[in-house]
Length: 603
Image (cartoon, rainbow, N blue to C red; front, side, top):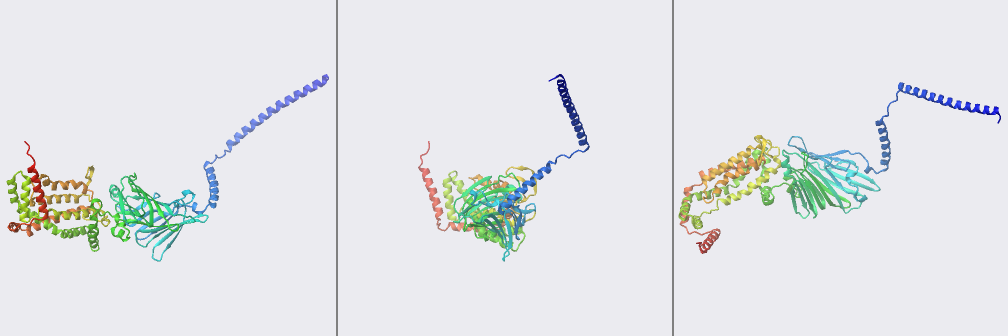
């Protein structure tokens, strides 16, 4: 390469390098100017921020569009929106949900709460009736499905709702409820189509609400009852939490509150019943929770049932003729025999008087007078025996002085005196014992009589609960935080009656405790009765006043102690014929004396 070629080639290289450097500098200046212009433009024309809520809404809309497409491909029973439908008559109003086709609330139209509001026995999503379906290994229950309701009115005036859930592939669930024109008995059935079952597992869940004055009293009265097909029946009181299993076929199972109950009744039979109940609920508006698992027998893939939702009214419950009236506790335990006195004597008298008299305080007074007249024969016998004992008191005192500390010899001679005088030493006790069942019957009747609920009398606003004339700022153990005037009057009249009887009745000096028991006993019970129904304490008070009047009249105008004394002296002159009871008593005393005499004396 010659000298000129080398110079020319070098110049070309220098030109190329200069062009590249110049081009880079120009490009950088252009980009910098463009960036500056962009910043200036952005400041002059700011863009809005990204709307995240709009993006979420757009995403949700897209998901809903997809879900709608999926739902459109699913059977109707698996998709829908819960709605509320209602069945009601003059006494009962029941709300149902179309998701699950079961009652969610029940209002007793003719009753109010203690606060004057609508009375709901239960209300809310915690109340369910659900059956496990024989598909997908029991993963589907009737409470998971959506139903289409159809309503109709029957010719007899009853109203019916039929819930239908179409599950596709020829499978369906039909749940029907029917409420009569009057009454508290809801009739229902669960029918399966395209599913074969011999029995159907059913869950009945109820959460009962606080309706009365005192929540503690309601929880103390909360009980579960069940009645078997063989007519055996039993109950248990819910204390905090209880569980019971009934393996024998059962006819019905019920949850009883203080004045209202709900019971689930089989048309045929429940093969097995398991209940879990509790009153240990933190919510003060809830009395008890009950969860009952039922294995129900099916007929043609159908379970028929009835559902009682109503008051613990004895006549109403008895009218169904399935022993629902057992849920009215008229006497149980060792005192179960008094329920027959209530059923065949007290309730008929009470119902008869209620047809003519509207004031229940007056009814109680008339009932008390009638009962005292019925028992007047026993009352007279008791006072007559006490009069005979008073006439014999001087002679008994002579025997006591004669035999001193020899109590055995004194007892035998006293029995001989009674026999010759024709006096029965138990004549005053037995008539009193015959009156005790009536007193116990009233103890059970008044606190359970729903007719007395919210019925006022004198200063008591509600005869079914305690009357209160004063509220204490503190709680007294075994008494309470209020003062019941009827309880105080009952106690005062009991003490007066005890004092009156003390002056008219012979006292046993060898048993000083008997002397003071009539005065101690009323104070022992004052704490118990202070929380009892005003109807009960008023009855005991009024009964005491009648007893005082009866005793005064009998002893003042009917019993003549002089004539009694003359009769006793005449009886002494007659040959005595001891009764078998006296013969056995004297024989026992004689045998005991013989054994004591045969015992070697201690040195």
